[in-house]
Image (cartoon, rainbow, N blue to C red; front, side, top):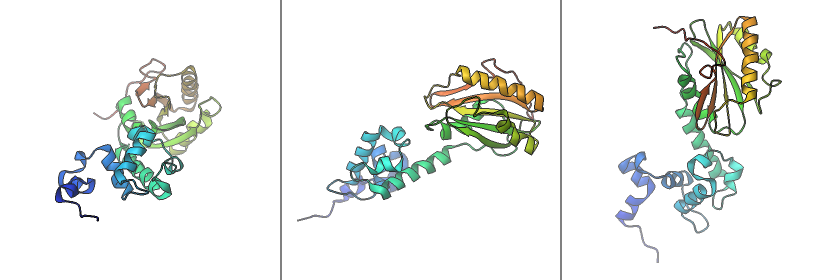
Length: 234
């Protein structure tokens, strides 16, 4: 004969703990179990949440998963996998610091803080450019290419076309290293030097190239590949 849960058992449930103590009081398993909702196939929601985190390397590993990969976990399925991936994407977007038009770029740390959440988990290299006005304030940003970086993919034409179209005076190059190590490769340095030369001819200064990775960032300006002093309002 089934019996109703006691008051103590109800208060131990993630939903009740969330209401009583706030989101910080919940562990990873409890948070994921709330996304799952109800149990299935003899497993509780907590059982399924624990299996998901164990199979996919915790929350960080979970953030790399596709809906198809999650759906193959016993007890998950298509609807629940979609809910989990959507929730993680919402969190990622909230965590991303927005570079608003008119904001000043004062250091490579500003670039890192903006792009870290969106690029640190990317499985492919992405190359972007931040467009700046004459006082190094943000005018916009554009995606140049996606995939393994080569000189043919990161062509000056694709990098500088948006800058020339919008009248940008300078730009900052940004790309990620999916390996997690932000150290610049020989190809990174060669591409940067090529784009500096092209920018000099076109009158659009390349003031930095920031490599973003899970374990930090690297500024090629600080590495000595290029040299500039930020011209920002005091």
